[in-house]
Length: 112
Length: 114
Image (cartoon, rainbow over all chains, first blue to last red; front, side, top):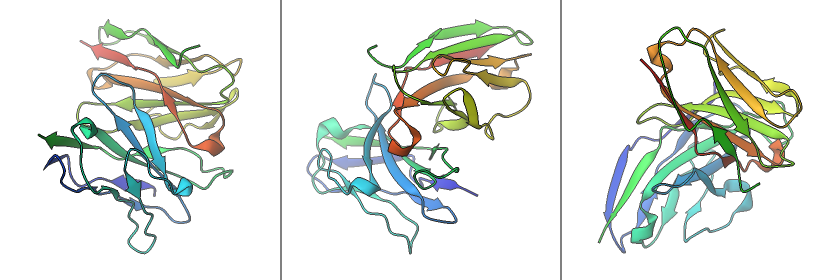
């Protein structure tokens, strides 16, 4: 069965400190992984996806198939990074297993 | 349009009543998703449309829940005989097509069943 696990409900770090938001998944096959973010009073929006291998707002995430993880990292946290972060998973592109499922989310709080 | 639009933004109803929630996706987006989000939880998948057809409705919790998208654009989520446990924020999202994986979310419809 498909599952996304985010073990931390809340993560609080000081400004300038490194950040790592954990995400583990369960999927038999080659999934696509995403990170979505929801800033205060804004809509849920895509932050990054593993196939793009890009850095967005200083955040990166590497898909580790051996550990079935897709942790989100940023070397130096900024106050504007405070938000809810959701890890999400879907089946491969162009496959019939196309629903996108979400983890329970981690609230990131950056202290000044 | 400016983005995905959902109406109503808030709905309060009594147990046992029928409710309809509407989603107007971004023009040209062929994929449309419905999610339910309870307090402290992530979005829970309900159903996904590709065009007019439901490509995956495995997340609908029971037969009281039904969704349609007759012309491949606007979608309506219908809940019959509402129960207090149906109280949640119902989110709609659209995507240019499934392959992109980028969902554009609406602001949600908050349903409260008294």
